[in-house]
Image 1 (cartoon, one colour):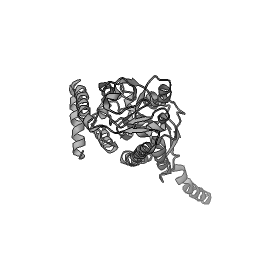
Image 2 (cartoon, rainbow, N blue to C red; image 1 turned 90 degrees about the horizontal axis):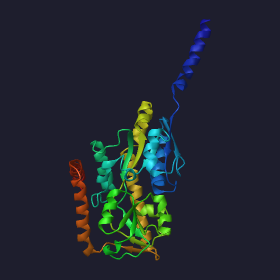
Image 3 (spheres, rainbow, N blue to C red; image 1 turned 60 degrees about the vertical axis):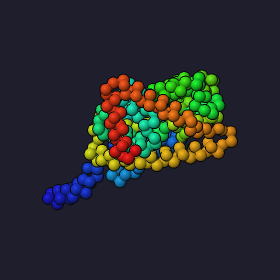
Image 4 (cartoon, rainbow, N blue to C red; image 1 turned 90 degrees about the vertical axis):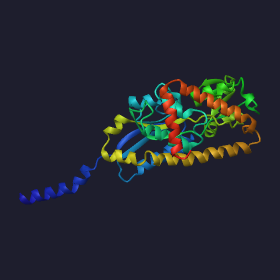
Length: 333
């Protein structure tokens, strides 16, 4: 009897490590657009692969690109809260009611490049200056490079923008192009090609990568490289879901959040956008127009006017703009 008990005890001790090793937490990730889109292919997919390959084996992310969990880009933040997805790619510019103060990131001329944008967005979040994020864990905070204008109509000078109906991605870009005489139309990127094709709009504000990713290069011929404001982008997770995970799972997610994914985005998306501009310049069917030097004073004055008007809307806006400039100055920009 004693021998049997000893053998049984030894057997249980051998299997104890297996019993204590929990299955990895499974999380659903939603991406509203194609799996070939640059943000997914070059950033999100490698991030998912890195998390899933982590030796801790504490997290398994199941990715659902191509709008498999929902194609409505404005609905992505609510999908996270409703449990449709645990993680999703979010464009705050298209849901300004939820992320109202993110407009500071869109102010024309403030963010010069992706590196600036990441530093500013991350800095504002770290200081708790952007409302709307309490229900989320921010896995990564990014910005586009500044938007340009891509049109089916000729553009040689700034004055040629007047009267053109242009797709915009957020209210600040809308106010900026309106100041140049354009007619802004808020529209998600997947609708642009059809809208230009049927003449509902003449042009679109896009970053170079999105021009290609959403096929708008097929319906436009003029690329006017006027650097408008940038736009925030973020990979968000349900804070409630994150808090419910094991410490090991949270540690893995933390390892690949923040600088890990932001550095990846900075490197890959910057390179891709630069490559697109190079290809556009080499295409004989397209006309790439840089801003004329004598148009720059009017552009600078317009940017200052739009920025001042936003700051004047409230003391909160004015304070946020001051702090945003301080963050950029502290980072050497």
